[in-house]
Image (cartoon, rainbow, N blue to C red; front, side, top):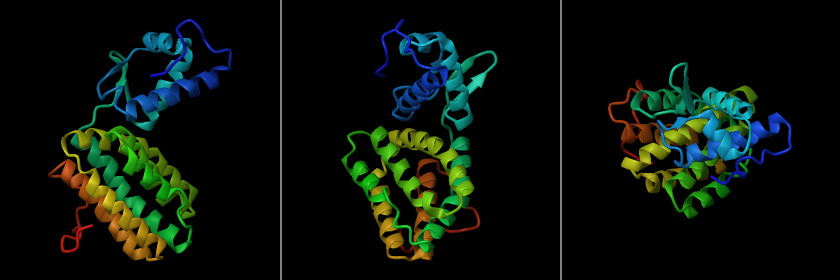
Length: 231
Protein backbone atom coordinates (compact mmCIF):
# COMPACT_ATOMS: atom_id res chain seq x y z
CA UNK A 1 0.00 0.00 0.00
CA UNK A 2 1.33 3.42 -0.91
CA UNK A 3 0.96 5.63 2.16
CA UNK A 4 2.65 8.58 3.84
CA UNK A 5 5.80 8.03 5.85
CA UNK A 6 4.87 7.35 9.51
CA UNK A 7 5.02 10.49 11.59
CA UNK A 8 4.14 12.79 8.70
CA UNK A 9 0.42 13.20 9.32
CA UNK A 10 -1.24 15.22 6.55
CA UNK A 11 -2.28 18.73 7.58
CA UNK A 12 -5.87 18.17 6.52
CA UNK A 13 -9.15 17.83 8.45
CA UNK A 14 -9.97 14.48 10.04
CA UNK A 15 -12.82 13.72 7.58
CA UNK A 16 -10.34 14.01 4.71
CA UNK A 17 -7.84 11.79 6.52
CA UNK A 18 -10.63 9.29 7.19
CA UNK A 19 -11.52 9.24 3.49
CA UNK A 20 -7.85 8.76 2.61
CA UNK A 21 -7.54 5.76 4.93
CA UNK A 22 -10.92 4.40 3.82
CA UNK A 23 -10.00 4.44 0.14
CA UNK A 24 -6.64 2.76 0.71
CA UNK A 25 -8.05 0.07 2.99
CA UNK A 26 -10.92 -0.64 0.60
CA UNK A 27 -8.49 -1.06 -2.30
CA UNK A 28 -6.18 -3.27 -0.22
CA UNK A 29 -9.06 -5.54 0.84
CA UNK A 30 -10.61 -5.83 -2.62
CA UNK A 31 -7.27 -6.53 -4.26
CA UNK A 32 -6.35 -9.18 -1.70
CA UNK A 33 -3.37 -7.34 -0.22
CA UNK A 34 -5.28 -7.52 3.04
CA UNK A 35 -6.73 -11.05 2.88
CA UNK A 36 -9.90 -12.30 4.60
CA UNK A 37 -9.28 -12.80 8.32
CA UNK A 38 -6.38 -10.33 8.43
CA UNK A 39 -6.40 -8.41 11.76
CA UNK A 40 -6.63 -4.65 11.37
CA UNK A 41 -4.83 -3.06 14.31
CA UNK A 42 -5.54 0.63 14.69
CA UNK A 43 -2.13 1.71 15.95
CA UNK A 44 -0.33 -0.21 13.18
CA UNK A 45 -2.58 1.24 10.48
CA UNK A 46 -2.18 4.74 11.93
CA UNK A 47 1.58 4.40 11.65
CA UNK A 48 1.37 2.99 8.14
CA UNK A 49 -0.78 5.86 6.91
CA UNK A 50 0.90 8.56 8.97
CA UNK A 51 -2.30 9.60 10.77
CA UNK A 52 -3.72 9.40 14.28
CA UNK A 53 -5.94 6.51 15.35
CA UNK A 54 -9.13 8.58 15.01
CA UNK A 55 -9.42 8.53 11.18
CA UNK A 56 -8.41 4.86 11.19
CA UNK A 57 -11.13 4.05 13.68
CA UNK A 58 -13.73 5.94 11.64
CA UNK A 59 -12.64 4.24 8.43
CA UNK A 60 -12.92 0.81 10.04
CA UNK A 61 -16.44 1.63 11.24
CA UNK A 62 -17.42 2.58 7.70
CA UNK A 63 -15.91 -0.61 6.29
CA UNK A 64 -17.79 -2.63 8.90
CA UNK A 65 -20.99 -0.97 7.71
CA UNK A 66 -20.15 -1.95 4.14
CA UNK A 67 -19.58 -5.55 5.17
CA UNK A 68 -15.86 -5.67 4.38
CA UNK A 69 -14.68 -5.65 8.02
CA UNK A 70 -15.94 -7.37 11.16
CA UNK A 71 -15.44 -5.75 14.53
CA UNK A 72 -15.34 -7.60 17.86
CA UNK A 73 -15.21 -6.11 21.34
CA UNK A 74 -12.52 -8.58 22.31
CA UNK A 75 -10.68 -9.35 19.06
CA UNK A 76 -10.81 -5.93 17.43
CA UNK A 77 -11.26 -5.48 13.69
CA UNK A 78 -10.41 -7.91 10.89
CA UNK A 79 -11.05 -8.27 7.18
CA UNK A 80 -14.28 -10.18 6.73
CA UNK A 81 -13.88 -13.87 5.98
CA UNK A 82 -15.81 -15.17 3.00
CA UNK A 83 -17.77 -18.37 3.43
CA UNK A 84 -20.70 -19.98 1.64
CA UNK A 85 -23.30 -18.46 3.97
CA UNK A 86 -21.99 -14.93 3.46
CA UNK A 87 -21.71 -15.37 -0.31
CA UNK A 88 -25.19 -16.82 -0.66
CA UNK A 89 -26.73 -14.01 1.37
CA UNK A 90 -25.10 -11.32 -0.79
CA UNK A 91 -25.97 -13.00 -4.06
CA UNK A 92 -29.51 -13.84 -3.00
CA UNK A 93 -30.23 -10.12 -2.53
CA UNK A 94 -28.53 -9.32 -5.82
CA UNK A 95 -30.78 -11.83 -7.58
CA UNK A 96 -33.83 -10.14 -6.13
CA UNK A 97 -32.81 -6.60 -7.08
CA UNK A 98 -30.24 -6.39 -9.87
CA UNK A 99 -32.12 -7.99 -12.80
CA UNK A 100 -35.10 -5.71 -12.10
CA UNK A 101 -32.82 -2.66 -11.98
CA UNK A 102 -31.35 -3.64 -15.36
CA UNK A 103 -34.80 -4.16 -16.85
CA UNK A 104 -35.79 -0.65 -15.83
CA UNK A 105 -32.61 0.79 -17.27
CA UNK A 106 -33.25 -0.91 -20.60
CA UNK A 107 -36.81 0.42 -20.73
CA UNK A 108 -35.44 3.90 -20.01
CA UNK A 109 -33.01 3.52 -22.96
CA UNK A 110 -30.16 4.67 -20.73
CA UNK A 111 -27.33 3.47 -22.97
CA UNK A 112 -25.45 2.19 -19.89
CA UNK A 113 -22.49 4.59 -19.94
CA UNK A 114 -19.29 3.08 -18.58
CA UNK A 115 -20.32 -0.53 -19.13
CA UNK A 116 -18.19 -1.14 -22.22
CA UNK A 117 -15.21 0.61 -20.66
CA UNK A 118 -15.49 -1.69 -17.63
CA UNK A 119 -15.58 -4.72 -19.94
CA UNK A 120 -12.43 -3.52 -21.68
CA UNK A 121 -10.65 -3.05 -18.33
CA UNK A 122 -11.65 -6.55 -17.26
CA UNK A 123 -10.24 -8.00 -20.49
CA UNK A 124 -6.96 -6.15 -19.92
CA UNK A 125 -6.69 -6.96 -16.20
CA UNK A 126 -3.46 -8.63 -15.15
CA UNK A 127 -4.79 -10.34 -12.02
CA UNK A 128 -8.07 -11.44 -10.48
CA UNK A 129 -8.19 -8.45 -8.12
CA UNK A 130 -8.16 -5.87 -10.94
CA UNK A 131 -10.60 -8.06 -12.85
CA UNK A 132 -12.95 -8.16 -9.88
CA UNK A 133 -12.89 -4.37 -9.54
CA UNK A 134 -13.70 -4.00 -13.24
CA UNK A 135 -16.45 -6.59 -12.84
CA UNK A 136 -17.89 -4.57 -9.96
CA UNK A 137 -17.90 -1.42 -12.11
CA UNK A 138 -19.59 -3.24 -14.99
CA UNK A 139 -22.47 -4.39 -12.83
CA UNK A 140 -22.83 -0.89 -11.36
CA UNK A 141 -23.05 0.55 -14.87
CA UNK A 142 -25.96 -1.82 -15.51
CA UNK A 143 -28.03 -1.00 -12.45
CA UNK A 144 -27.30 2.69 -11.84
CA UNK A 145 -29.63 3.99 -14.63
CA UNK A 146 -32.64 2.17 -13.15
CA UNK A 147 -34.35 5.45 -12.26
CA UNK A 148 -34.79 4.55 -8.59
CA UNK A 149 -32.05 6.06 -6.39
CA UNK A 150 -33.00 3.88 -3.40
CA UNK A 151 -32.71 0.71 -5.45
CA UNK A 152 -29.33 1.83 -6.81
CA UNK A 153 -28.07 2.64 -3.29
CA UNK A 154 -29.14 -0.76 -2.00
CA UNK A 155 -27.11 -2.42 -4.73
CA UNK A 156 -24.20 -0.05 -4.07
CA UNK A 157 -24.19 -1.30 -0.48
CA UNK A 158 -23.64 -4.84 -1.77
CA UNK A 159 -21.07 -4.23 -4.48
CA UNK A 160 -17.96 -4.25 -2.28
CA UNK A 161 -19.04 -7.50 -0.63
CA UNK A 162 -19.75 -9.00 -4.04
CA UNK A 163 -16.28 -7.98 -5.22
CA UNK A 164 -14.73 -9.59 -2.15
CA UNK A 165 -16.63 -12.80 -2.82
CA UNK A 166 -15.47 -12.90 -6.45
CA UNK A 167 -11.80 -12.40 -5.53
CA UNK A 168 -11.95 -15.28 -3.06
CA UNK A 169 -14.02 -17.53 -5.33
CA UNK A 170 -11.71 -17.08 -8.32
CA UNK A 171 -8.82 -18.43 -6.27
CA UNK A 172 -10.35 -21.91 -6.44
CA UNK A 173 -12.71 -21.54 -9.41
CA UNK A 174 -11.18 -19.24 -12.08
CA UNK A 175 -14.34 -18.84 -14.16
CA UNK A 176 -13.85 -15.24 -15.27
CA UNK A 177 -13.52 -16.03 -18.99
CA UNK A 178 -16.98 -17.58 -19.00
CA UNK A 179 -18.36 -14.68 -16.99
CA UNK A 180 -16.76 -12.13 -19.33
CA UNK A 181 -18.57 -13.70 -22.26
CA UNK A 182 -21.81 -13.60 -20.25
CA UNK A 183 -21.22 -9.90 -19.60
CA UNK A 184 -20.88 -9.20 -23.31
CA UNK A 185 -24.12 -11.01 -24.07
CA UNK A 186 -25.98 -9.18 -21.31
CA UNK A 187 -24.78 -5.77 -22.51
CA UNK A 188 -25.56 -6.59 -26.14
CA UNK A 189 -29.10 -7.61 -25.24
CA UNK A 190 -29.55 -4.50 -23.09
CA UNK A 191 -28.33 -2.15 -25.82
CA UNK A 192 -30.67 -3.85 -28.28
CA UNK A 193 -33.55 -2.80 -26.02
CA UNK A 194 -34.56 -6.34 -25.02
CA UNK A 195 -35.49 -5.67 -21.39
CA UNK A 196 -36.82 -9.15 -20.63
CA UNK A 197 -33.94 -10.92 -22.37
CA UNK A 198 -31.30 -8.84 -20.61
CA UNK A 199 -33.03 -9.37 -17.26
CA UNK A 200 -33.06 -13.16 -17.68
CA UNK A 201 -29.45 -13.33 -18.86
CA UNK A 202 -28.33 -11.29 -15.84
CA UNK A 203 -30.31 -13.49 -13.46
CA UNK A 204 -28.76 -16.64 -14.86
CA UNK A 205 -25.31 -15.03 -14.81
CA UNK A 206 -25.49 -14.17 -11.11
CA UNK A 207 -27.09 -17.49 -10.14
CA UNK A 208 -24.58 -19.45 -12.21
CA UNK A 209 -21.58 -17.80 -10.54
CA UNK A 210 -22.67 -18.52 -6.99
CA UNK A 211 -23.76 -22.05 -7.93
CA UNK A 212 -20.31 -22.82 -9.38
CA UNK A 213 -18.34 -21.11 -6.64
CA UNK A 214 -20.46 -22.29 -3.71
CA UNK A 215 -22.21 -25.57 -4.59
CA UNK A 216 -25.38 -26.61 -2.80
CA UNK A 217 -26.45 -22.98 -2.65
CA UNK A 218 -30.15 -22.32 -2.10
CA UNK A 219 -29.79 -19.15 -4.20
CA UNK A 220 -32.34 -19.04 -6.97
CA UNK A 221 -34.79 -21.50 -5.43
CA UNK A 222 -38.05 -21.54 -7.28
CA UNK A 223 -36.47 -20.68 -10.62
CA UNK A 224 -34.37 -22.90 -12.86
CA UNK A 225 -31.43 -21.34 -14.74
CA UNK A 226 -31.54 -21.51 -18.51
CA UNK A 227 -29.69 -24.81 -18.88
CA UNK A 228 -30.82 -25.40 -22.47
CA UNK A 229 -29.32 -22.11 -23.58
CA UNK A 230 -26.42 -21.36 -21.23
CA UNK A 231 -25.10 -17.82 -21.12
